[in-house]
Structure formats: structure tokens, C-alpha cells
Length: 172
Ligand code: G4P
Ligand code: MG
Image (cartoon, rainbow, N blue to C red; front, top):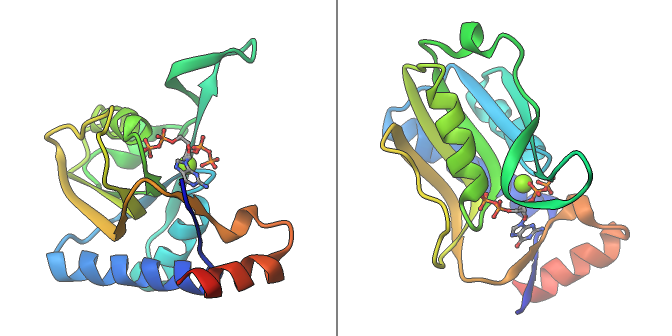
């Protein structure tokens, strides 16, 4: 499996393209919900373009005894979520749609709060067989870039950001 390096510059531009798609679609979110941790930085950039507040949620794939699980569980969730999200138009943000399991879980949870509308946005969608599916309540899926099944290396995981940026420049 190849590795694809993305610089902060490239991430910013993907987020900008998502914001443009959101605007063109006519979907006007009231609130951005970021899935941590990969969704935090993309959500913050989207806020620059869309100007909406961000709520954060956290998901884990291990149980309380640190054993891996097939399905995610909540580790951090929105307090008083029902009150904050009922009747609102939500834009859910993550960095990558890989297996789609996290996104299925989070969209189903959010739909329980009876939002007025729900859309999903990701910087990257991997075009592969997905284990998860989007529930019918998801009205839009905004994708920065569609890729194959390569491993994406994000700048926030870099130990040496200069080396990372060189790889990003060489690879694209
Ligand atoms: P999905 O539903 O959004 O497809 O995500 P999935 O549960 O399949 O992904 C499990 C974890 O693997 C997620 O991180 C996701 O960000 C990460 N992941 C999947 N493909 C890639 C990739 O190509 N590059 C990188 N860097 N990460 C990838 P997580 O457990 O939520 O951790 P966090 O990093 O978001 O905190
Ligand atoms: Mg993630």
C-alpha cells in the first residue's frame, strides 16, 4: 500500500473546496460537529469559511480494559446534546471516510437527536468496499478528494514537519 503525504497547505485547500461545495449545495449548517481527533483541524478550517460553532465528539475502538472492539463506543459526547442539536442543521466532519464504521455510528447517534438536517464532510474518501453505510437521514456527503486504498499521512501526525512537507511535495 502506497503512502500519500498531505501538507497543511493541501489540507486547507481541501477544506476550502468542501466549504465551497457546502455553499453551492444550498445546505446551510447551524453547527459543525467534529469527530476527534482527526476531524478537529479540518473542522476548524471549515469554520473559517462557514463561520459556525464547533462541537466535538470522541470515539474509541477499545473497551475499558484496552481490548480492541469491532465497533466504536463513545468516549466523549456532547453534553445536553439533545438540547443543542434538536432542530439544528448539522455538518459532521471527519478527516477520512475509510471503513465508514465511525461515520455510520456517529450519523446514527446524531439522528437520534432529531436534527433538522444532517450532512457529512470528509477531506478524503477511500473508494473501496465499505463496512458501514450512511443512514437515509444523511442529506449530503461532501468529499474533498476521492482516493484509492492508499495510506494517507496527515501533517498533524508528523514528527518532522519539514521532512513531511518534502514528501508531500514529491508525491503530488
Ligand atoms: P471511518 O468510519 O471514518 O471510515 O473511519 P474508520 O473507523 O474506518 O477509521 C479508523 C481509524 O483509522 C480512524 O482514526 C481513521 O482516521 C484512521 N484512518 C483510516 N484510514 C487512514 C489513513 O489512510 N491515514 C490515516 N492517517 N488514518 C486513517 P481514529 O481511530 O478515529 O483516530 P484519530 O486519528 O482520528 O484520532
Ligand atoms: Mg478519525
